[in-house]
Amino acid sequence: MKTKTTLFIALVSGFAICTAYGPLGNAQESPPSAEAQSTPESREVTLAYDKAFESYLAGEYQKAIDHWNRILRLDSNQVTAKNMIVEARQKLAGSTSGQKGKFYALVARGKYGEALLKIEEMAAVDPSNPRFPRLVGRLKKVCAIVENKPSNAKPWNIAAQGVFNFVNEEENLPFAYDAFRYAAELNAKDPRFEKLTAMLEEESPQVKLNDTKPEQAGVLDHKKEVALHYIYDSKFYLAVRELEDTLKLEPEDTTALKRLGSTYVQLKDYQRAREAWEKALKLAPEDAQLKEYMGALDSIPQASSPKRSKKEKGRKPANSAQNE
Image (tube, rainbow, N blue to C red; front, side, top):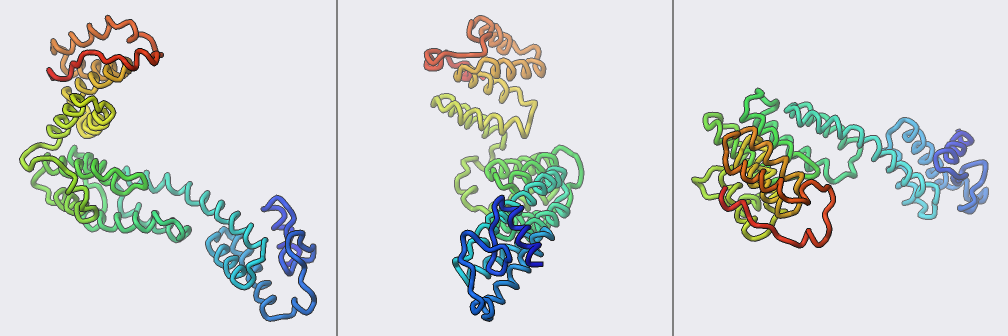
């Protein structure tokens, strides 16, 4: 077992490192004397190394790390244990990264109960990841309200976007808040949308405190109004974010598309401006204002060029958003 373990260390670490009990010796650690090898402490180190490598070979990386940490508590000079902890943590990160895709796919499909089992499994494999317990806690709250997305009806598809942004390492809680409230607007008879909204307010009170929507205003109307004020204040990137979030909730909102196109014109991103206005024109082919915008865009020489100079980026065209 000792010879096998020593060879294993050399293979996985890329260099020959040996533990206190290895027959090949160790270039980094001074080989213990025969007297030291017979002490209870040295025997405990030897046993811990055996258990650590057994766990490592079995793919139980967290257990292996625990054993190597135990070795370091017994002897802080054990370089092998330090190196193998680094190695095991890399393996651990790799083993959970493959599961993340499956987890987020389950959440996206509205399989919240199955997603909870998956994230609990990931948390057990990598208990050192501080994000997993938070995701477990949030999913449990979601599952207490709805364990599976009940249907593909529009309100539930929108609420599902909210859940995805709520139960996510890269969370977007303001968007989740808007999604839950918009779903409640679309179907006021289903109390679960209000419960999801209240759940988020309890989880993150700051989201409600930062919200500026008047009580009687609709979610989308308010978001488009906020975007318009951003445009007036030349805060174009904030306007883009607000309008793109609006279109995630309602992809066929012509007003949002028109304002998004106007914002991209301000940013000299003529290709995206054209794409936004073309989508709007398909939804509202008789819109004279859109036709005027497209004609004005066609008259801009830079609109047909994929590259823009720094001088062009600094020039500010007329604002077309105010008439929308």
